[in-house]
Amino acid sequence: MRLGLKLVGALMVMALIPTGLESAFAEGETAAPASSATPAEQSQSPSATDAMAEGTALPNQAEEPTATGEPSTAEETTATGEPSASGEPSASEEPSASEEPSATGDPSASGEPTAAPSPTVAGQESAVPSATVPTGGIAAAELTYRPKCDRLPAYGLGEPVALGQAPDRLGWVPVEGTVFGDPNTTAGAWAVVNQMLHALQTAEAGTNVRIAMYSNTRMEAASAIVRAYCRGVNIRYVTDDHGMSFQASKLVKAFLSQGPTGSSFKACYLSCSSNFTWRKRRLRVVTTINPRYRPYMHAKYLTFDNLAGVPHVSMLSSGNFTATQMWSGWNNVYTAVKDKTTYDFLNNRFNEMVKDSSGNDYAVKASYAAPTKVTYFFPRGVKNPRSSKQTVTSKTDPYAHFLDKIKCTGMAAGYGNSKRRTEVLVSMYQWTSARLYLARRLKALKNRGCDVRVLMSAGEWDLEVMPILRRKSRYGNIPIRNGDRGDNFIHSKFIIVNGRVGANTKAKMVWTGSGNFTKSSLRFSNETSILITGNLAYSQFKAHWNKLWSSKYSKPITKLKKKKTVRADP
Image (cartoon, one colour):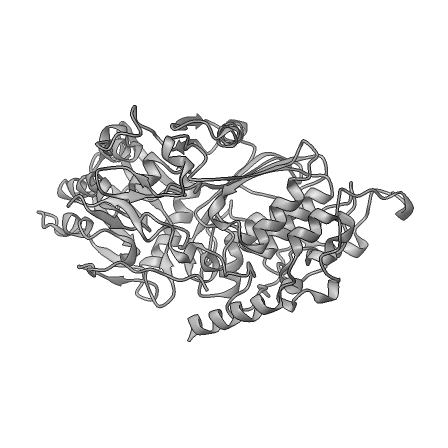
């Protein structure tokens, strides 16, 4: 029923969205009068004139885990591309339709409400109607506009925005910590997206923003980006080209491509580091003798040089600006503040993606700004990327190296589980046969007495993974629960550890980001992940884990279906 409503909503919007936007933009004509915008477009543009994103202020995540605490799940592939054990192509490396926006680019596709009606948190934020937003004392006759910014209503992007105009959102301040989405409630569905939208709505003229986003089909996101650009924020944007047929992405490209030099837009074909000979043809990449798949610019992060007076802010997300990520997937976004090392590293990697000239963008950077973090950027290429014999091995997989360091006993008092055993909790959307060595390492940890548990999206795992995890040991099987419930699914990708890691007997760590346990995430696609040490991230993710582990949101599973699920984005 819910899927049917979503499809009906998408079809209605398709019929109503004004056409000719790009040609009108290029010719300097108004695309359509403001009144021609669909109610969905008008209600979902996150300008201050809308109530769309209002009332969804998030709790101070630096102080305690969010109540909703769930990550979303829908941006990855389902066609696969990972080589299976048999040498035949596996079916899960392509981003599934769940990653794609509705064909019209309409933000709301589901009959679901577009605004979270929960009250604003005092002291956290307040929105100012754009019609009354102060413009720095500039008289109306003296207002200046970037191209087309005086005609935003024609594009369904709210009231006109002048250079130097105050932000659409005032009083919102970023804090260190994690926000989780919960597709079962309106406020939860908007939580992850709103964390990023509120930041964009808060950015002031003259500041610098970089956005790497795999997919954007939400008009709310397009509005927040374009309106920030119009008031003078310098925005550089990089994305994957798979979603460039959608209205939201077209609008962002149309505005940011105008300049000035501080703003730009790039859509990468076959990821932002693919300069191989096959790139000239629209074919999937041959990675072994038979299996084939397509790499992507799959990262999802934003950086701000200054946000509401807070310097060097970075946001790393597991979800995109899409309807499925909100209303069906469990996702999370981590915000790092006052961390110049992480900020500079992500910007450096962004610049490398824009060059689109390397087949190996792998890099690692540690930051000692509390909490301690290590940020990873992929792909990690091989010496001969065109070789049909190239393989994925644990020797070049940082996740394997991390698991190898975990010790099951010997932690300090107060760490580990109630039996003084190290906890290793994994949530993974996609897991393909190319990285079975990770499953073997988890099983080895279980055999040594670690408390290993796994949350999964059953429709997105290769069949070879489950038998390894389920092998009997002296400590029993690894408990596994499936988060595929109705339209909802686990889209988060994280590892939680509490106990001993190497010589650290007081380890509380979380590893989260955009990458799955697939070949493409390691070898070919642009991905970001971050390993965070400390009680803040651990307590937030553990509370979220406990929620997902409950019978309401997941159920035990011991065997996978023979056929993978292909989800359709409503």
